[in-house]
Image (cartoon, rainbow, N blue to C red; front, side, top):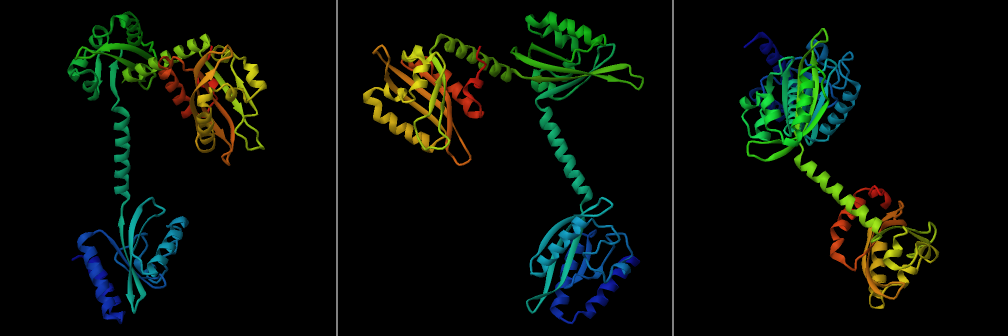
Length: 429
């Protein structure tokens, strides 16, 4: 054994000799013995019930042990412990005095982080001593942070592949392993970048990408490129590429770093949404859908709106002008078909009081006397007390219902997901 260890054991034995209770001595010895076996590098500290240091096997704070013994555990040790951590140590020590085994982490001024367990030793049901088993977890924490950073990086790059192109040769110096997941080609096949970016391109993009590639290897770097390229399976996929220059200490271009992302699914979704938007605008122009805003009194509790504002296309659905509904907020209820009237009133009242949207389909009598079917959908905006302030939504001629179901579903989702006005849910020309 080293002299330090012998000295530490001598001090511990002398301390134990001063503890009158045999059970306390055995408990302390067992805890310390187990701690030394399981964690040879652990710091072992014994405190009395007042929080004063009675024993420390080695100094945490870099101070001579003889200067530590007798001091309270909540001392700042000449500024070596952060005041914030001292408050936590006091709190944890108090919990240990109440008989709890407590774990805590503290940092000291030199940047190290310690994890400690506070274990109470009782005599006659009262805590007489507290043993602290403390471990330096600074590097463990750094390793965990590095692991987290690595995981975040891996999550961030799993949907991209990276390349570095040397300048001015145009030779590919590096291709990330994810290249194969995207293209199906082996990395060694991707080293021939000219082949990858020209021979595998969709014919519609070859000339455009060729020109940008010539710009890139000449030092005039296009910041981004979007194109369709064929994978090894023969499938064409959409790729979005960003380029950034790498320069030496003299500011001369020596390479180009390239990040390529497969955004095929995103492109398809964007195209689908654009198509829906165009169809919606077309139908809106044809007058088969009308937007509306129903405004409610801030003072009164009433299911009938103070006013209903429709776009002019409501006339093509009902035969009534938008002004007719503005002048008579009850008109929409009045034109409901008699056989649907009670159901519509009951359904609207429930949705208005209990839910966040209105969704009603009803037959109605047009101004010219014909019977049609109308679908009303809207989002209810309430104040902090839940009182309805307005309803923003659409009225749709549902007489030929199947034609509009997909459009309505798309519109409803957009409006429901964003707290916006109906007129903002689409760009309406």
